[in-house]
Image 1 (cartoon, rainbow, N blue to C red):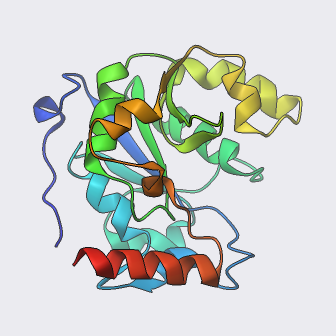
Image 2: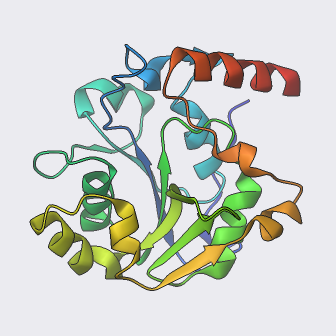
Image 3: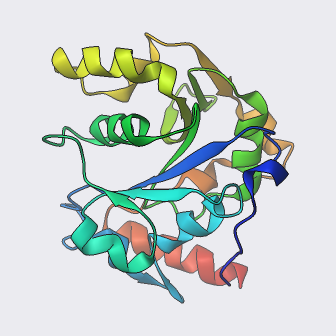
Length: 210
């Protein structure tokens, strides 16, 4: 089931990209480290890795190197005290060698390759992100450019940790539900696993696809 990586030159983007899986969360609602929950034949964190490895051969993890080194990917701890996902995105961009960067949370096992291919077609922008019809944003399965670094640094200094606040200050290219619908996708792909109940529901969805 492991998908082989493909060089960035073969991606729809035509430009180099780095991919980051954010795994620095506390998993407080799950009661255990959700990245290591076994879902079918793999750990939860391996699902986003499989998708990203089909888009670039440079996939990295933002998290505790002592916990994730066994996955065989570069692992970088958050720069300074973690203030949530914004710190993880900041760390990713600070350590990246490419302008465009795929950022994906470790707890989104239903995310699809086709969705990220669509995002890449809309790059470059400061951010390429999903905005649902009800206005809800999905910032943890997006493309972030290193051009965001200054704005992120300023928000961290101001203690403005919500990613929605960052998106007000940068140039964003949004994906619509109509666009993902034309690919046969729905908002289901953005399902997060934060609680045992959510894990049970996602597990049923995964098994129904087999």
